[in-house]
Length: 214
Image 1 (cartoon, rainbow, N blue to C red):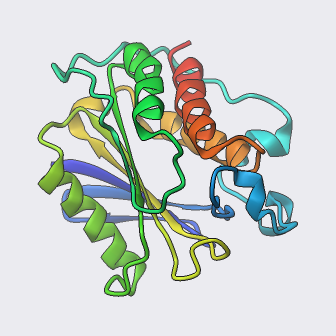
Image 2: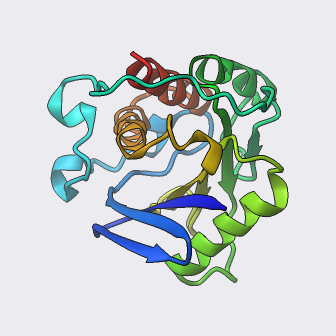
């Protein structure tokens, strides 16, 4: 069994699907293009659309956890082969995957990032959610992984994609609701920065670990 949490652009709700809990968070983010996120700036910012939870870049403060967490002991060894990039956004997949080891060392959670190319067969948000759930079960053989999956739109460089995460049940005590809110805070903060995609991913995951394991 896996917890699936969904980011839906433009609305906020909590629903249930079978044994899985899906949190829908309102958040609008520009897609990154090429080697640098800033290459696709459109002039939009969070104040135009509103975000939930409110991002660190909106408040000028860094997200911090309100609780103490213990590092997860899942028996899952770290793998740097944890980035699947169908969009060509990550310049050095191997080095960036290795850079996420700090997140694993702090949390005990194996990170996995999947930038998925546009798929015309996935015509609805629910189909994308189901795809993410099934992809985890078909491709990840443990319950100790945090999967961040980005679905690109047909106009990959200009249209906002759809973001979900899939949480293995063995990491519930670390990547709980508050921890995931903090993760999205850092996505909001660094997605709009001028960091390369490689550095953006490193900052998102490692800043999350620093904040939730304080």
